[in-house]
Length: 313
Length: 317
Image 1 (cartoon, chains in turn green, yellow):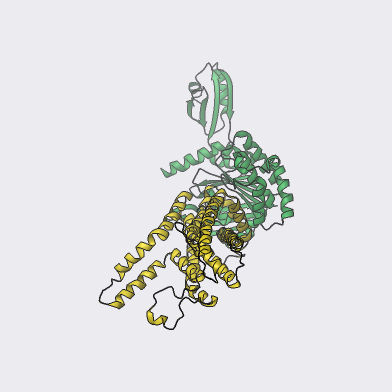
Image 2 (cartoon, one colour):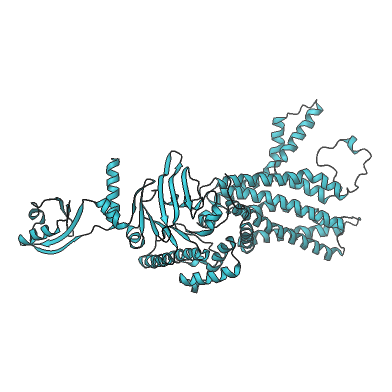
């Protein structure tokens, strides 16, 4: 099961004095949906370009499906599908023609290509506009056409760069469902994003990028534990009492702050929900809501980068 | 370490797609309409001139191409002026257009090398120009047969085909120049403007620049004949940097069989020559050999510059 599809060791890519990717180690296994996360300019796209052999690494080693993408790019690109950020098509050609041109570049016999194109267009629900010019397509349709491109290729590995950026929520969900379905059929998917909640819902593992390095790597739930570690955030709403005052005596409570919407945020070093609830009720307050969310990737992300910044400062 | 796989994978697919794009693009239709109109005008003028002169001429089909009737220039002059325009029109958005359409990274993520993309664009353009030139030549020849009532001779056809080859090489130079600009400049408009500027310099101003530069480099002393000759030779060498000069010289020599030399000729060299006698085809071909080689070399050099620039580019879109 765990055959490595991508292996990256000590990868570095420098542009002049700046390192876009600075010592990267990464393994992606077959059948995974792997998320590359990080703010803009963290080196995600550069890493992807390096995997495709479109840029030469300054140092380090990459293996994609057992090949070196820079020395044997054709062997790699024959089996890897790529959906670039804001994918473009030849606007004066129809959807079908666009796919057929790409198929010809892969040296695919035209009868096979015809069949696969029809099938792929059906799967991404673009069959009804197959013979319309791509110029008339919306952003979401273009992204789906990009996926169809990967399907026609029959790629074993799909690399998607910001696949959902600029899409409305419905198109995003559609695209994500499609990606999950592809992965369940055995395609390995690597996707980059800065939209965390989306990645969280579909990725089996994620890597957090920061300034060309991977800060954290692992399952979403594990990362949460690692980053948030001893810090717990409890959000609570209660009427009829001053939460800050009644919880003052409880051991382990740090900062207590109140937001405009009336939600009180309590930072603690351990799970103090029971005691807080008790304190509020005993003080005569009406406890309306209390929640603690540790597994939210957004939180992990925010915390992680806060920490990085404070180290830098 | 060497990369594996052939750089020509996908070349034919890219070239055919480019050619198909050009054939259906309004840009190409406009330029071709312009050329067809000028061709029609100049050939019609030439036919009138030829009919009015009664002297016998063994190369009447070549005269169709070179005869000018005031105020219209000859077809060849028109072509020398307009072929660069086709070259520029076909390639000025070749590479930067792929970036601005954001198709570059997608096409390069297919199992082809960059070589195939650039070469495919070049060959696709060249193919279209070749088809247009052949069509044009056949049209003109057909028109000649209808209006003159004579079939072209074997040598005329041979010279006509050589002329097509020279024209193709000439257009190829401009195609390569335009492709080069499209890799250097990120915006297609800038690339087109750069191409047109160079076109203006070479077609309009080079004829003025060359003698000026020559008199600066090799000043002529009125009392020293050798220095005058030297200046003329330097001037000619500078003029030949322009592909237009090479094209004009080559077409004159191949379409006017009487042409014996393209440089300075001294009286003693003409001794015992029968003036006005046409040269055989082989000799004319020898005469234009340096011009043709020069055009092909320019094409290769400029293409190589485009190739190197393109290979070093970061693919980010």
